[in-house]
Amino acid sequence: MMTSMFALVLGSVGAAYVFVSALLYFTQDSKEPPAIETALPFISPLLGLVFGMQQYYVKLRDKYGLAIYTLRMPGQRIYVVNSLSLIPAVQRQIKTIAFAPIEAQAVATVMGIGPAGNAIIGSDKMFEADSYLSTFVPSTHPALSPGPGLDALSGAAIRYASGSLAKLGGGKPMAVELFFWVRQELFMATTESIYGPKNPFRDPALEQAYDFEPGIMAHMLQAWPSLLARKSLHARDRLLIPAFEKYFAEDSHLQGSLLVQCRYEHNTSHGLRGRDVAATEIGQMVASLTNSVASAFWMVYHVFSDPVVLAACRAEVEQQLVKMEVDDDDDVHETLRYVHIRVSARVVMEDTMLDKYLLKKGATVMTITPVQHTDASLWGPTVGKFDHRRFLRGPDEKRTTNPAAFRSFGGGAVLCPGRHFVSTEVMSFVALLLLRFDLKPTTKGGKWVTPRKNYPMTSAMPTPKDKLPVEIVPRDQRKWRVEFSSSSKGVEMIAEDVAKGGL
Image (tube, rainbow, N blue to C red):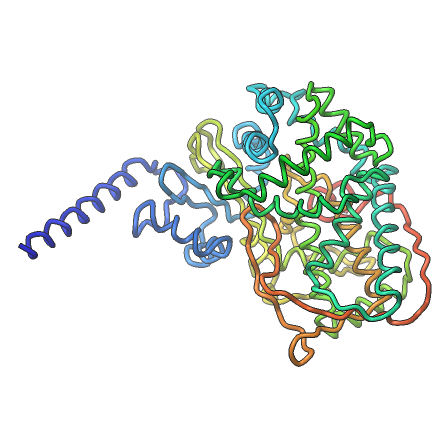
């Protein structure tokens, strides 16, 4: 009896395996990118992603060496683009390999916008030139492109950070947990510069805003956020949206930055009103803060934990004193290259060809930043090490690396419009720390310990899994006056910036 039962189970499993293998084979077009990880059809890639996260894609690159490949999972095709030569072609096909549907889904599920707002933002006209989504990024250019608007925004953030650091500890050593402290400093510097004197985040109750981010994936997948993301839902619906409603109802944005005024004008010109206008700020808050905070933390960690890097960076900053030159971005570049985990996703809107490959309607196309950022053929044999001089060039030196290999701010239609502001803010914050303070770890033995990393699916930067207690020690009792020097060209962070600069 037991033998026959075992044989029945074994036979059923075998039949199921044959069925799903045949299903995969007969539904995979020979013109599509090759399907890999098919040992357990539809299941192997799912397990790899769950347990390997972004590093799973790096392992697949090394294992198969393919320019592009297909991962088949239950109900989903994912085309992963490894080759740098294929990425520009993906970026050019903005209507057939589109980001807009993902934006519309995030608006509908994550930000808490109501039916009227969703009807405007996620309408069938989203691909038209005058749609809400098509015009959003251009509407922010006066504030975020190099010029007076960006200078005012960056200057406000730097002045706040400088003033906050001047008050730190009353001139005495102060013990902090490094990530928590950096997060608080960058959060307030950023929100003060954007929202101005009526910044809603001056209200201590809004410190619970940090509860929103961990629940983003539950909102995005509509995975019962009322049960699985209670704190996130409370932070969004009971704290953040009401605070932004009050801010705009009182016309406080008129005292804020050009950026928040541009966003308000864009929203209202497309017909958004009241609560829906306030809810859009949820997305802007996450975009402005999530990755900049983590970037600042990792840059502080890598600069201060390595005596060689610390000495070189401090000497460079002291040579210029506090004149914040936005060209001095080598350490930001390397921090973003070394740590970045961004996944860029687009939806295939109709069957289309990418080079010689067929991409099927409804599939997802992904580019994985760590795949390009850890490629030794692009960055050389030291790709696995943090090298603060990697992006350093002399006045007459040419670039030795294809600028398109640096993917931290995306590219094409999915290019981060706030990259100049974030980069300047983070660089300036670290420069001010270098000038004024030493950081001494208070861990056992007083040595720097590399924290393990969390890899949030909704963030482009990892966060530290372990706490890192440090003592912030003033280097001397001098008083500093910070002058922010404006720039007409911004920070050359990605290939598009290099092209504009004519380099």
